Image (tube, rainbow, N blue to C red):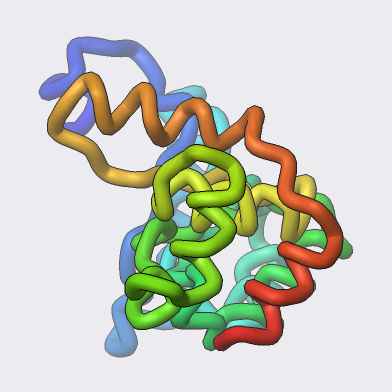
Length: 170
């Protein structure tokens, strides 16, 4: 159905957005592998998974990406990010610009943003990009100005001290 709705003959990256606990993970990834073998999808990704689930999925098919919640204030998937980094698997953090109390007036995100003349969102994204070369943030946006702000985070270079401060802050 996705192929028809999108009007394409293949999907470059198909994310399994939630593992169904009622169906063996290997069966779910096996169906995606079958679609991949048919040329309908080129790469397979997983969302909201543990290291164990990634390892099990990798026995069935190559896994291109993992999409888990990860940001300055929610680092429960840090172990998954480290695993992805070691194995060259793209890591797509969702809710990437969430900074919570760290962005409050006078907080570390606010101070670092002010020092660079940039926005707190850019600082949050720059911190993520500094975490690993496999990080591919996907901040949501509804305005071109937000998109431009988010894109400019790729050029923001945080110092090691700033990265360490933000890392320690959570």
